[in-house]
Amino acid sequence: MKIKAAVTPKTGQPFEITDIELPELESKDVLIRVTASGICHTDVSGRDTGMVNPPAVLGHEGAGIVEEIGSEVTELQKGDHVVVSFASCGKCDNCLANHPAHCRYYGELNLNSHIDQETNELVSRFFGQSSFATYSLVNQRNVVKIDKDMDLALAAPLGCGLQTGASSVLNVLKPEAGSSIAVFGVGAVGLSGIMAAKIAGCKNIIAIDLHENRLELAKELGATATIKSGKGVDTAEKINEITGAGVQHVLDTTGVDVVIAQAIASLDTFGKIVTVVTDFNLSIPLEALALKGGSIIGTSQGDATPQTFIPEMISYYKKGQFPYDRMVKYYEFDEINKAFKESENGSVIKPVLKINY
Image (cartoon, rainbow, N blue to C red; front, side, top):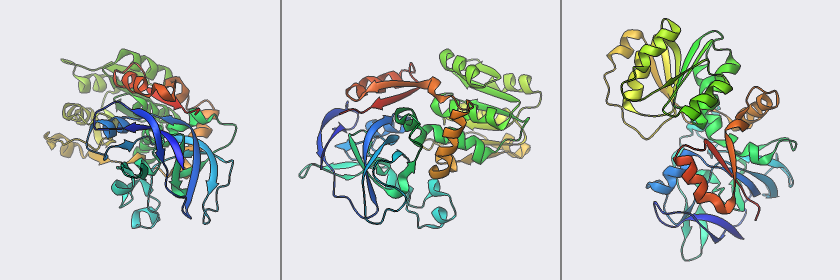
C-alpha cells in the first residue's frame, strides 16, 4: 500500500515528505488512517542520533481512524477512533504482570525504523507505528479505542509524553494528599506531572525550569510555586524554604547530573525521585540519598498500561482536571520541520501535526 510519510533520509537531516510502501496487513494488525501525531523529544533523538536506521519514518504519538483489521483482531472494528501508544510483546513476564512499558523486548519493538531502499517498504516501525505518515500499520496491542466525541488531534499526544508525566506521578510516585512534590523540567512531560500532582491533592507543587514562559504555564496548570533555575541558583535551598523539610516526591525530566544532585538535596526523609530520562549517566555522590533513606527510580512510560490510562487521562480532561490543551500547538503535516524547530527552541511545548493528505 502506497502512503505519504515524513522520511528521515539520513541522521540529523530535515524530514522529507515522500511516498513509501506499507507491508501487508497481518492477522493481529490494525490499519489506521492517521489524522494527527504529536511530536515528542524521543522523535528528536530518533532523527539526530543512531537510534534508528535511516531512511526511516518516526512518530509515536499517533491518532486516527481504523480502516482495516486483521483476522485475529477482536476488540476493534472499522471506523473506531483510536490513539496509538508504545509496542509490547504481551508474552513476557513483565507484560503478563501488567507492566507492558517494561516489556523485555521494548527496545527491539520500539526503538527502530527503516525503509528498505530496494522495495521502498517500511520494514520496521518506530514504536510499532511510525505515525509521521498518512497511514500506520500497528499491532492491536498498541491501539487504544477512545470515544468519538474526543478530538483526535488533541488526543494524539496522550500516547507517550503526557502519559509518561502523568503516570509517573499517579502510578509510580503515588503521592499522598497533602504531600509535597518538585518537578524538575516543565516541558510536556513535567507539566503533565504537575497536573497529575494537583489531581492527587499535593499541597506543595514546585516547578523548576530555565524558561519563564513554561513556569508561568506551570502556575496556571497547578504549580503552587516556581523556581527559575540557572547558574548560581540553589534550587534545593529554595525548595526547603518553601516546604520546611524538603519534598517527599520528585519528578525529574532532565537527566542532568547537577539537577539530580539538587533533587537529592531537596528530598525529605525517605523521599523518592522518579526519572523518565534514559540517555544519561550519573556521576554524583549518593551519600546524601543513603542518609535520607531516599531512592531514585527509573521508569518507562510511567509504567502505564495505555488501554486503561489513556481513557483515564481523557476523563480527567473532560472534567477540567487535566487541561493539557493549554500546551498544544497544531501544525500542518508539511510544516513538520518548523514544528520540530519551534519545539527545540522552547517556544512551543507540545507540537501536534494534523495529517490531512
